[in-house]
Image (cartoon, rainbow, N blue to C red; front, side, top):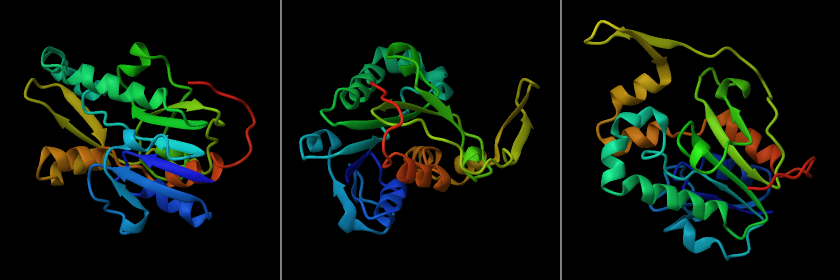
Length: 213
């Protein structure tokens, strides 16, 4: 199966698909960090839609769409960034590819477009971490949990207003260790290994049901 893994510089899903013998390529404006440049197309994924793919798994940027950044929405709406991101997301919805999965965190596309077909968690697939991840599917089966574990550790603190807060430890460490906003975004948007393996194994199997974007 020929698979385009769009907006993926990490190659997490691409590598798992390759392990199964599929002709998968990651595609991103950035160079790949997964160590297999021969499986990477550096450039716009939008220019790859008509290249004869059997399936696309897409991870469009969520910076302007995720609810976690809602405090910045007014500014992003005013300067057009959010509308640009919405339009970019929708190009994946209408791509002329038979099987499509679009991944994004909880965000505004659930109301602007439609509710996702499912919301998954890393801890359903063996990674002790919590990250609500939305999947919009076309002609693909829902992902089934493979190894349910605990939700992982959380970091708790009290903000300047005296309000108690907490977030998954992996997320806190990503924010703490990253040196730039771009690096933070990359770390926060990582695809956990268990999810990457589940996508590779389950999305390439015969359909149990049809889902239309």
